[in-house]
Picture 1 (cartoon, rainbow, N blue to C red):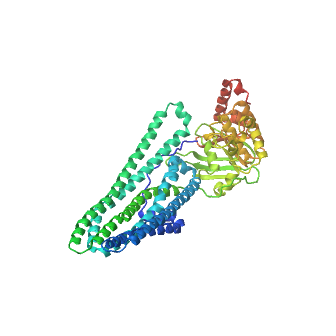
Picture 2: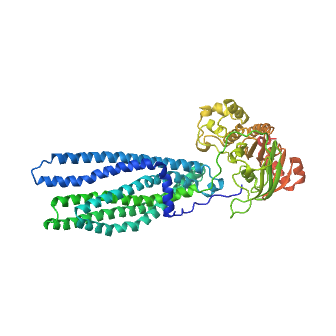
Picture 3: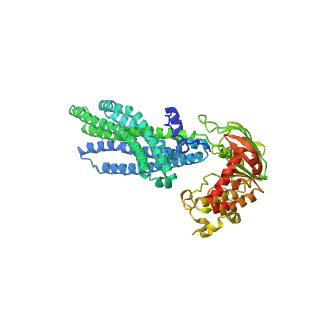
Length: 599
């Protein structure tokens, strides 16, 4: 296949504030009543706290007389205990709801990312996509519940506290608000900086995931190349970048919080000074000044909640932008199936197919035409880069043709329901991927309803029955990450068995026997030959032994079909195929007796 690797993920564009709020509400909406309950409980807890300064005022006034203070002390105790308990319940409800928001977002993202079109995945780094499911959704939790509730609760508590302070002494309230507005205005300056630093920090976290995914995807190659130190340096650089932006975000958040603390402290000193003068002049009582100062300290919580809400919004908006970007990646239609659709061997035809992977890349196919009747085996041969593997990608609709048509049973693949199309196809990729899990899970991956008899049948066909007998846990043996506990040939046989177990109408084999020894290759060729009696087999092959058993051979070169015929016809009539065949004969002759054993 022509190279068409993914490029790095570009920086995520910032969403407009209105769109950010709309996206936040979309995540928040299913849980709005639960959030409202939690908000009401925390608000009740805050309200009980607001009544404490008034009770304290009454207590101070009674200290000057002969009245008992037992009732007041008991009331204060009840208010403290009740307020704390109600607030704790409200906080639990909100945190539980926040986890539900994250769960829903992760479910949605996982389902969507697994339905992405292949070109989208190839353009985006997998590690970055994974970080959007993990770290970005975690940030979403705080902004959809804590930020919204903190803003609402903080606003109501702030207004209630201001109203109580205004009723107690408007002059001292004016002093308080003047200081808070003067110093607190700096908070608005740092909020955009928090958003910018957080967005870059999240992108850097995605880069760390990308580095690790790249390394662990080629772990043996890294070790064999002695590249551990170099790759560690790349990972450390990405971690350093995430740390740098995280520290920057923390710096601005700390500045925002400390500004509010400073505003309240300065307000306290101003109120203490001016309030003391008003007490001395007889304008207010000592009890009123004490109560006002208590209200001032209670003002710290709602102001802090408002600042925290604004901060969390800036942090969450960066995460929302990255989640939205992932949600806008192009996906395939839903409804993919697993059971093959009956109907006998499938017919395949390419009519003037023109294709390139992206607009900036050269064309891979330049008007490809061929027709494959139902049943039998058709081999595709040609130099590297001729576009052979791309043929399979277009049949599976991993990619859409740029021009022309791909037909299965005379019907354009774009007109097939995608699930029905793929359910009819068995596909063995070039690198024969094996997933982490047990051997059984890998075998039934494309046919989850396969019976024990079906599995045993394909084990024999794929020459895996002996392997199963040797494994400690048989079919339940864990094969390791990407099948690391299996040899290359065993992985290929597992992939072939998985495709055969599906009983497809069309079987696509992309160099499916390249890592097999002569004995196992011969056995699998026989199994494929048997399958070709009941299904249509298309195989990309470089081994002459595979090509000679094909019913027809399609010779491709430079993105075009050069010739179609049998082995004998092409050796005599096509110079390129004759050259390829001669090279293969030389390769077989030079490889020694073991290789020569394969017919």
